[in-house]
Length: 317
Image (cartoon, rainbow, N blue to C red; front, side, top):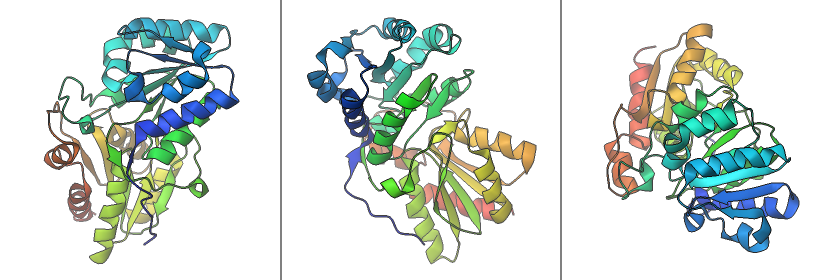
């Protein structure tokens, strides 16, 4: 199995902050907006270096989306920053009408997604945001897996014309991707080749998928691990190519199984190559307060859950 080195656990939101600061130096059209969460979104470096290109909207997320949409008319590239719950559910009407319907070049950047934001609990732990955003016509949805990939995605979307939802998180997680792997919107990455089962993972569960693949290899099972950082547009060709070889797939995401990556993949396979599939995701539930590790365990979002799902789907081949 191909080995990856954890370069040191770091939160993906810091990757966003570093990427945004780099854009501040290289792209004068990038404007940052925040809804009173500068520290949580790691935006301070950008603000310090570009004070005239930052708008503190305050706790008025709907207003922030409207302002961002307006800025695009003058050729600016606005990056909005707040928690995922407040970037989607709270402002869905404004995003739909002012950004998606109008095709505005707004980059909606959302931290603290999923259950791993931890102790803030269910009211902040949105598990429906990928579904909400991928259903909007023309909306690109990206969910990177670590610090390095989040930085790369933050920079890449500045050159991508059209509305984007960029999803990242609060906890410190393994940082293992390298420049050699590359990052291209809409293109998945095969992290480990295998012939027995495909594991298509996104976000924080990509590292867990690699750990699961190691355990499965020790049991004689060769898992192909694919990093699906772009939920929409989905790399359908890569998924189909993989399952034609393995004949079974597990999807893994920190999101409700309804409306998430798993459903996008099942829709693709049902039209092209029906394949046994198991879902590692939350099961139509809200979250709760707890540490990230506790919650990942309770809601079945870790290495052990992926191993179990892989064995279940193999039994269905």
